[in-house]
Image (tube, rainbow over all chains, first blue to last red; front, side, top):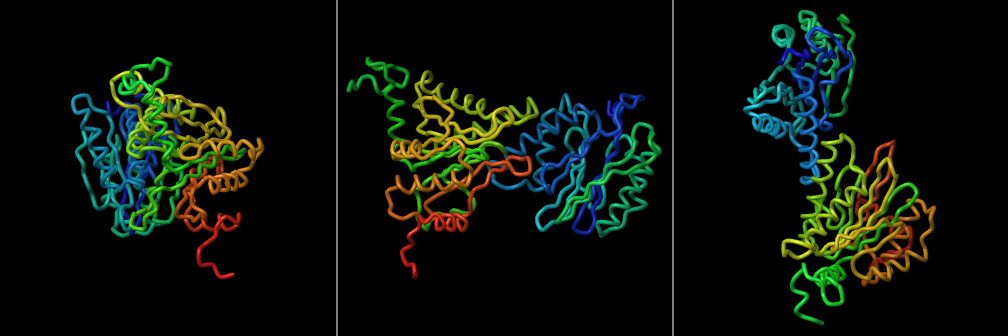
Length: 202
Length: 249
């Protein structure tokens, strides 16, 4: 079921910044039906979540997260920290332990003092924190390899963008279910840059 | 009058009144005033703070103004603990609507659903009504800017200008005289502050006795802004309403 729509997601940590990237294909098994599908969503200025896996579950899960996050914001009058948000996602996924959402989230955010935070989890909420990069989706095996090879610690925003883009594009080329370009967000304490990548359009 | 009829909320009196609801409105008549004015380009909400001790830790939280959702906010008059429950209920209702329909809840629907909750407490359960009145100010794409007033009975109405809390009758009649249909947001702020200063007990207005919030559109998005104490002081001075105690000319 995880391979029904196809997806590729990767997040990387740099020096006081992070980048999160996804592919743009939405397919129904082997047929491509959209080439501009958004998988990465902004929760607030400093937290982004990418949802891979079944697209309908990704959209519903995102809507539920917006619901919970907005109430949190109104009641606590502040934004959620990435670690807290990750725990929230994990709890929501585990609620459906015996009938899960077929999604694998990738969460990336800047915490207190703008320290970058990334994590991924499986579809029932097992958190996997990492210091360097996290991947998810049908292209995850190629992504693991590509990131391992290309990643260097403490990269600046520009270099991080190049690295994550190369890792994403080369991995989705080996996966028939993901591709049709890339969508990269590079987030620093001062700004968020969103870029669309043109890759092999297949 | 008839003592037998006022201890149960779910019973009418012989004259056809609900005493508990009326007593609740009495409770609100002792609370700080709040005024709302609808203008062409926004809604202005002003409130009088009753608790102004220096010992009170204010930080960022407000006493009278609350945000319900990105596009709706409210001013409160009455028992604060009751108000907190209702505000929470309103927030959850607004989010549930957004979750179901993926768009912001229309202001009137939000007011209506909150008032339905309030009405429930006047008809079943044997619980007392909420002792709070609200002034809701918000924007939606169907009707633009709107101002609603609701009271403990669960009744609500859309208003161009309204006042709740202490001296609300006096404030309401003053608003009726001075309100113009095509008032701008700045003029509305000035009018609200002027009316509030006339109905407040104290002689001079300082920024720590008031709260001012505005709901307006900014680059296509609805913004809810609470005025900071510094800008509020400047505003009061520019309208000529402050008489600070030790002012050297």
